[in-house]
Image (cartoon, rainbow, N blue to C red; front, side):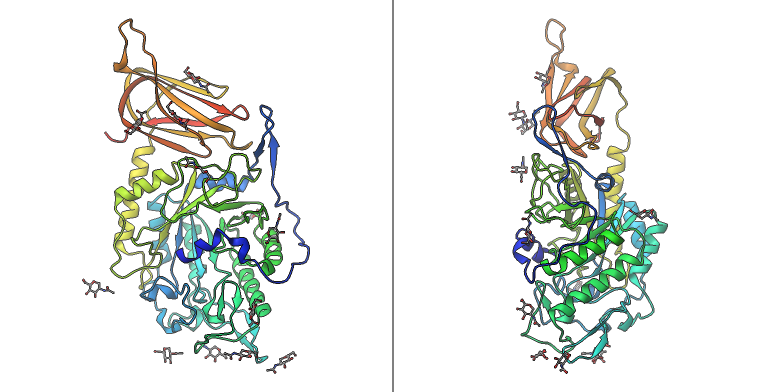
Length: 483
Ligand SMILES: *[C@@H]1O[C@H](CO)[C@@H](O)[C@H](O)[C@H]1NC(C)=O
Ligand SMILES: *[C@@H]1O[C@H](CO)[C@@H](O)[C@H](O)[C@H]1NC(C)=O
Ligand SMILES: *[C@@H]1O[C@H](CO)[C@@H](O)[C@H](O)[C@H]1NC(C)=O
Ligand SMILES: *[C@@H]1O[C@H](CO)[C@@H](O)[C@H](O)[C@H]1NC(C)=O
Ligand SMILES: *[C@@H]1O[C@H](CO)[C@@H](O)[C@H](O)[C@H]1NC(C)=O
Ligand SMILES: *[C@@H]1O[C@H](CO)[C@@H](O)[C@H](O)[C@H]1NC(C)=O
Ligand SMILES: *[C@@H]1O[C@H](CO)[C@@H](O)[C@H](O)[C@H]1NC(C)=O
Ligand SMILES: *[C@@H]1O[C@H](CO)[C@@H](O)[C@H](O)[C@H]1NC(C)=O
Ligand SMILES: *[C@@H]1O[C@H](CO)[C@@H](O)[C@H](O)[C@H]1NC(C)=O
Ligand SMILES: *[C@@H]1O[C@H](CO)[C@@H](O)[C@H](O)[C@H]1NC(C)=O
Ligand SMILES: *[C@@H]1O[C@H](CO)[C@@H](O)[C@H](O)[C@H]1NC(C)=O
Ligand SMILES: CC(=O)N[C@H]1CO[C@H](CO)[C@@H](O)[C@@H]1O
């Protein structure tokens, strides 16, 4: 995927073509905000769907299609590459096994690549279209033409996700399709390769709409829809109205352009890197592909997508090594711990199974998260009002981190916070134990995790904050993980 993300930063410049007719869409996709009673600033308001999505914290993105059988990582930027459909031959395909791995990681949703840039579809698309020779043909670069015809990866994945009780959604790239010789949204007129079909730009846009209609109408409610590299201005209005009528509850990755044109009422934004790290300061509002902007009237939380395989490899790579558990734990803290939804790549191999080393590493990561954060140190709340949250312990208690969660129902309102503690061995000569600042920061949002420099033994913890409206702490918990 990486080749395409750089284009997102300038996604407006990708838009081209004829002006679209006024859209038929009813649900408001403009900014929604209220005015701060304290300083008059705008406070962006979330939709219910955006908050439910942030609550999921971890999802996966599944890369599995014909590119799984290539040595390169997809057909990206190789317009003449049209892998032979007979390559797609997963003899042990088992989407239940994928979902077992997802659950062992404690991920709560999965977005499946249903079509990547080669143009191959992992469902038996029944779309037909007209070629430049005025011949009507089937979209015949699908699983139905492959050695495993009769199977349907998309349908099987959805059934497994339902059984495993996780949300699901689809990635379908609108801007690239080697089968139809489409690059950056245009049917190109040069460099043809055998097997590619010659069509017009308007036929291409209809194929996209027809295939999205198949994906969005046959599989129930989707959690997330991924637009890698966005969509063209010509495609926009019809896709927006299809979204509105068929999938109004899905969150849409890349759902807004930086100038404030949004295709969905539930947009989410890209964090701007694929390393698995958000900026320390990362707001739930803002339209740019970075840490966002607390002043923005658009609630548009960030998603941090990254790989488990080394080398930014998304499709299964033969002999590709995996990132270490330690590195993946850092990824968790630098994303989920910084108000970013973490989307981890899952790369089933050529047999159609998640390789055992990937499955094992993801289980280890899930085990770490459950053991470190599953059982907070018990405490007695002394105060939870006016943005101050404090609690005490009967006896000096060792802790090494704090997890802060803000209730964002009425928008993200905390602008900075300080965490103080009474440290057991910091008693001064007169017996008075002073507060010591143990961590501080700016954005909290859905979740902020601060790991202390060292384990400290405390009798009291107090968190206070600056804000644009009186905040509600959804939870404040302390933990001891480095036991
Ligand atoms: C694809 O591979 C099959 C089986 O190897 C072969 O029969 C067919 O000719 C190939 N098609 C193209 C377009 O190369
Ligand atoms: C295809 O149909 C269009 C519109 O009817 C016509 O202008 C064009 O000449 C036809 N092309 C071929 C190759 O028959
Ligand atoms: C797809 O259909 C075209 C036109 O009918 C045909 O030339 C081509 O061989 C077909 N490809 C496959 C993989 O079936
Ligand atoms: C599609 O549109 C682009 C941009 O207008 C143009 O460069 C390209 O030639 C068009 N393709 C075809 C097949 O007409
Ligand atoms: C595609 O169709 C156009 C219009 O009919 C024609 O000019 C062009 O040569 C065709 N390209 C190929 C590779 O067949
Ligand atoms: C799907 O979403 C629609 C609208 O968001 C909702 O009315 C419907 O109840 C949902 N269906 C299921 C099965 O959850
Ligand atoms: C944003 O840019 C798109 C495409 O360039 C344009 O159609 C749209 O009108 C712009 N929106 C605003 C709010 O300026
Ligand atoms: C993978 O590793 C094996 C064992 O070292 C080696 O034989 C094989 O050539 C490697 N394959 C690739 C594609 O690198
Ligand atoms: C933690 O350690 C870092 C690096 O040594 C230092 O900059 C920072 O001030 C320390 N923080 C606290 C709260 O002691
Ligand atoms: C955290 O506290 C330190 C020491 O008082 C201060 O220099 C820094 O600016 C604070 N950072 C934030 C984000 O408030
Ligand atoms: C938080 O509490 C500390 C210690 O009482 C105090 O020094 C600081 O000014 C307070 N900050 C805010 C923003 O209320
Ligand atoms: C601390 C930090 O990384 N802050 C960044 C938050 O995001 C904004 C917008 O990208 C940046 O300007 C800040 O530097």
